[in-house]
Image 1 (cartoon, rainbow, N blue to C red):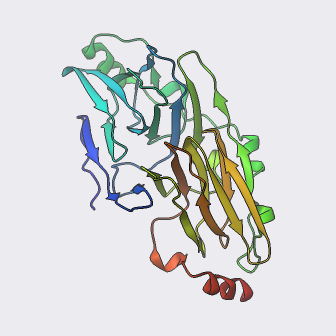
Image 2 (image 1 turned 45 degrees about the vertical axis):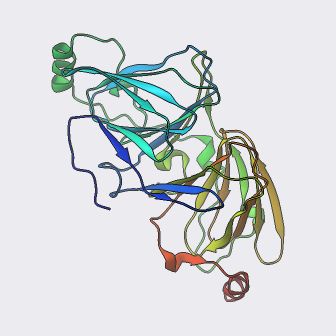
Length: 304
């Protein structure tokens, strides 16, 4: 699939949907499904009924909004007037160029909105007071974005350390991280700003949904790819295996991320109703990076 062309208009996008009896999967990769790199990802959840979220525009950043669970509406105001987009399918997203005032509303019960942005968080990027479209666009034209140094968070320091190719990770290097969460009456927000919090550049993001009871996902390892696994909705178990030892984690909140380095076999099971698996990955899809047979995995580990 080719990259979406740059435009100043909002567009509804349909992402790849890989149908599977164990649950459907959709994905986005840098330079493919979006016209921008994924510098920031955040998700909004626990939104009380009747609350509105957002109410701002960005000066230069682009974004894409997706309803990973439930549904919500996006109200967009620009020089073209006002439009309302309803998001209620996991494989659909709304692309928003810079300069569009937007607010999120009409959240359904247990809705979770995923937002992908072309830039890291920067307060100078926000326009929080709505003016007439001509004035707002004039402000965009005259604004010079200040590039302030980002403060390093403790989260990255606690991530898996970087090792040489000859060193091998074990399940003891896999850890459950509590991500920073902004609590608000309008709902909770958890964000990951590129390599500021992640120990890798975000190249691929995918999510599994519509998962039937009794399903099991995964059953593979990666030679090089690193990943974070997050329960965007409901809960599930992740079993990790390094060929000598196993370790099981229960993911049950959107602000918890399981960090898995390369060379670890993983299986996901125990899905509760409405579960959505969100994965942030360090590389685009490559079948050559997968190890799908457990005996081959043991042989791969023994050669390290």
